[in-house]
Length: 178
Image (cartoon, rainbow, N blue to C red):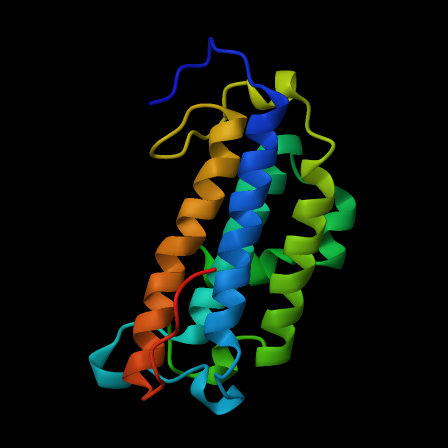
């Protein structure tokens, strides 16, 4: 685990922000040609679907970039609800019943709104704040900066799952990153 006794530099915050933005851009590319009727399919024996993956990424970015940094704020309900978080939390089990979830457009709205709020707030995080220990450490990091870094890694992990689901749905492989 990363040590909490080193000083966070401003460039590290920028690197974390850029990694999160890159991961989100890649995920959006993977989603670009997924039709709404494909979002809840579990092809080829898969135990997950696109809708759960995207909802989970929205929930996780909220937790890693906003909740762990500054706690829950009353205005958070404007872009993510407790019900949404429950449906997509880590231990939830994906169901192929679309009625168990918000509609695709709502999932995408939350996905985009959480990301916009996270990107807006990252710029206000100070090096001192990001050097603080996490109240709920991630598997790899103990500090709040580590939570930002893990957010990008976590998204790329799920982008890989979305990429596999795309292929199982018969989509062509994506071109190079970048």
